[in-house]
Amino acid sequence: MRRASGCLFGLACGDALGAATEFLSVEEIRRRFPPNGPQEIVGNPARVTDDTQMTLAVAQALVEVDTPNLNLANLEPVLRRTFVEWLHSPDNNRAPGMTCLQACEYLEAGLPWQQATRPNSKGCGANMRVVPVGLLPTDDTTRAAVAQFQAALTHGHPTALAASDLTAAAITYFVKGGEPQECSAYLRNYALSQRSVYHADWLGDLWQRPGINTPTEFISRGWDECLAVLDRLDAALVNPSRDIDPCLAIGEGWVAEEAFATGLLCFLFFPEAPLAAVRRAALTAGDSDSIACLAGAFAGAYLGMAAWPQDWVIRIEYRDQLAALGEFWD
Image 1 (cartoon, helix red, strand yellow):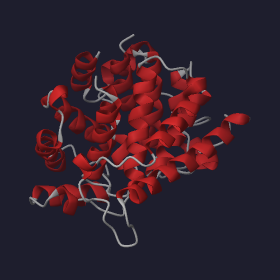
Image 2: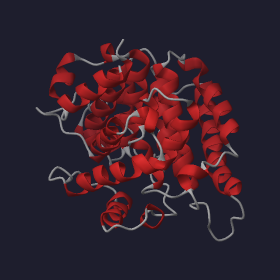
Image 3: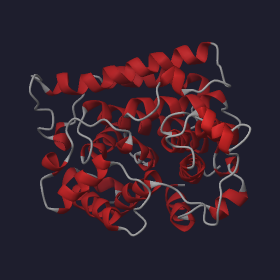
Image 4: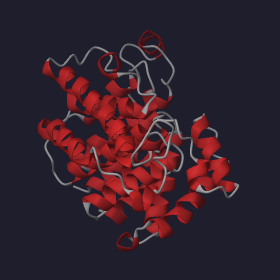
């Protein structure tokens, strides 16, 4: 099924489809792309956003550091380098988030990553790029630590860490053949099991903030916000309203936990129809490219490469890199 390839191409295709609708209201999207929003990716290559670019930066670092040797000392300098390379790439002109730009500038300046990160940011940039972590052939504890650490380099808020972890866990779940109808319960159990787990070997003293007394108190705040958004996801699935903007049920996706859950909702609306899932995600009032790239990643992880039209696959920007990474993890 080539699930890893399907996942990565789905992320990029969703990103390209939603790129044209970010910041627009649903009414304006329908006016520009009548009657139901964009249906096809446009251009050759079909351009993606910083979401895919930063995903490739994370993926490159993970490939360079052999999975059995994943630890803080090995991964941090490589991830720092790939983030700085993205910062200076001539293609980094797709309205990247200020949090990522500023943190990467501090990383380039040589600051310790705990000082480079934006400690109060839970913007969605960290969990857009975490998808490759969910493809790693490793144990759950290592996957969780790496997912949170790659987030922590730029987004230091506990919810950014927890949402990235949850996103990677969802990718692993689908790649291993998990069923969509059982996904929410699985993720809730996972979140509950991780609520008091602080990966000190990776995160060090990141937890130390005014008003926070212990590492457990720090990370539990992030997981509690993720559990709350899973409540909204479950409520939206009781009587699915596929014709209503998913952002109205979950949130507009500018913050990490909302981007995760709104993208997942779009996929769960259409688990066997991946194009419908990413088209629904692109027709949203919020962070449409990020929502659509996650919806595409979940769909591709579940359905494999067969999910995506060949015409999209051959035209998507960074096709060769996506194909090589997909083959590597498949």
